[in-house]
Length: 503
Image (tube, rainbow, N blue to C red; front, top):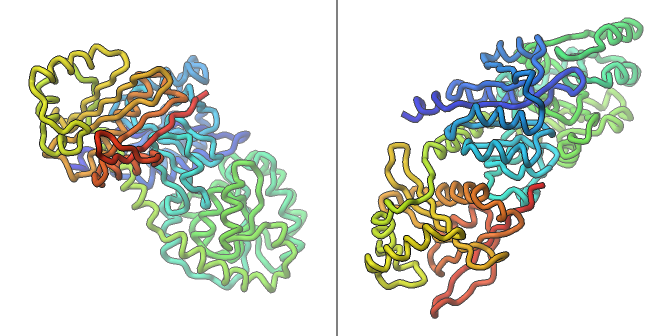
C-alpha cells in the first residue's frame, strides 16, 4: 500500500544550470531524483532547458517541464509554481535565487518544501534541509524552525553508478592514471589552466581529462592538450556509468570540492582539491580536515612517487564515510515526508466541539493537564465558542487521509509581544506511534502563515514533569529547554521555539 501511495506522490525539482552558472545544482538534483526511483516520479521545473541538459535528464527517465517564458523570475515565478502544487506534493529547491519570500509562497500551499543547501544560508521556510557537506551541525540551522535536518556525507547525493563504486572499492595500481575535472561547465576554464601544471609535476601519469555537456571551451582545451602531447586523453559528456567506470581506473583525482569530489572519494584514491567557488568552502574544509583529500596546492609539491602512499592512506577513510547506503537513507527520508503529508490539517470549527470534549476528558490528558479536574459539557461548549471567536487563539485538527481525527493543537497568544502557549493532544488510538511530532510540526508550520506577526516571536510548551513522551516531541522539533516552572504546586518543564524574521 505504501509503495502504491509513493508512486502517486508528485515530486518536483526547481533548479537551473547552464554553461555560465554551472551544472552542480542540476547534477545533485538528478542524483537525488535517481536515488528515489522507482518509488517517486520526478519532474524538473527548469527556466533554461538546453538540449544537452534535457537529454541527460531524459536518459535518467526524468521528466522536464519548462517554466513559461512569459512568467518573470522571482515572486511571479513562485506564484506560478505554487499554482501547480497540491498539499500532498514534495518540492525540492536548489539555488541561491530562492529567497524567503519565494519560499513562503510555496510553503503556503501545504506542499512539503525541501531545500538543498551548501552555503548555510538558512532556508527559513523549509520543512526539510539537506546539506551533504560534512562538518555542518544542527546549530547552523537554528534559524530554520521545525525543519528536519539531514546533514553530511551520510546523505551524499551520488548517482547510482557511484554508489556501486563505493561498495566495490579496489585500488587499481596500473596503469598510472590521474583524473582531472573542474565541474560540468567550468566557465572559468580551470581545466585548461591546470593541465600544464599537472603534466609537468606528474609526467608518468596518463591524464584523463573529463568535461561536461555544458563545457564551452572544448576547442581551446584540445589545443592545449595537443601542445602538451600524450599521454593526455580528453573525455567529453560522459554518461554517469562511463564516468564511474573511468574513476575506477584512476589512482589520483584533481577536482573541485563539490559533488564530483564525493564521486572521486567513492571510487577511492588520492584526492586533490582545487576550490573554484565560495559555496565549496564547507566541503573543502571538511574533506581536508578529515584526511579524505589534500589541497591541490599542497599536492603539487609532492613527488609523483609519493602519490601511491597518499592514495593508500586516504582510501580507508573514504571507504568508511562513503558506505554506499546514502540512497537507502534518502529513500527513507522521503517516504517519511510523503507519508506525513497524507495527513490533512485544518482549523477547528464549531462542529468539532464534541470531539474536543471527548479528548479533553480523556484520563491521560487530564492527568497531564495544568487543571486536572474533569470538564463539564456546559463549561466546554462556552470555552470552545470563545476560543473559536478569539483572533489570538488558533485551533488545528489533524486527520488521516481517510478523515479519521488524529489529534489537536491549540496555540493562544494572551499578550501582545509575548510567546504563544501550546496545548496539544493525540487521540488515544494513535498514541505511541510518533504522531505527536508530526502533529505539532504541521500545526506550527500552518501557524506561521496564519499569524504573520509570529516572525520574530516565539511559542512555548509546558510539560508536566515525568511526561517524557511530550518532552521528546518538543526536543525533536528543536525547541530550547528553559528554566522549569511551578504551576499549582506541580513542576513543569518549559520549551521555547523562536521564529526568525524572514526578510
